[in-house]
Image (tube, rainbow, N blue to C red; front, side):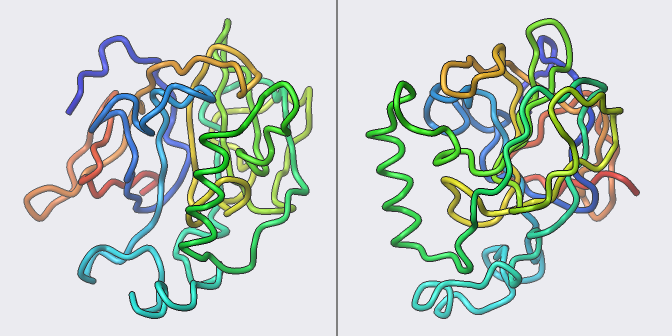
Length: 230
């Protein structure tokens, strides 16, 4: 586990059991780039721990590859998202439509296009972030909760929010391979120019050696079975 000594500590923004396939606990930059403030960003999904490969969806792998998967067949789609800190909402963008199904080829093509050709001077950041919330958590510290479900955002710009309040739902909007929550801290409220800030979670549990163990001020790896809110 990468040491969290210099990280900004916030509350875990989800409840239940989760896996982080992209995390600074495994590699930095966690998403392979520093663009869009993603250097220390996390992705969170829910999976079936009993099935081979820990799939995030209820259907078979061949069906996923051949036909795609309805959003409602993903375990995490529609799960509540919680404020990671006390703060003020500085951006709340909703209304970006999600595709009804995931499609591996379509989603890969979209991701490639955004990675190579996105121009912050003329392109809408929602094409990357989809529906998203940005909270100011402190002096030059902003939390971004990204790819939210269409119509799920429950806060508005200027609203004060307390840590642990429900603010939206996990979705598949924007540049997203599958429903998940993308979470990051950054030094600017503008995702297109922000730098990422290191972040750790004040408490969660990890399943190790057949039991749940409490982690304080930790950074999960991409193999950790984690949970919060029990």
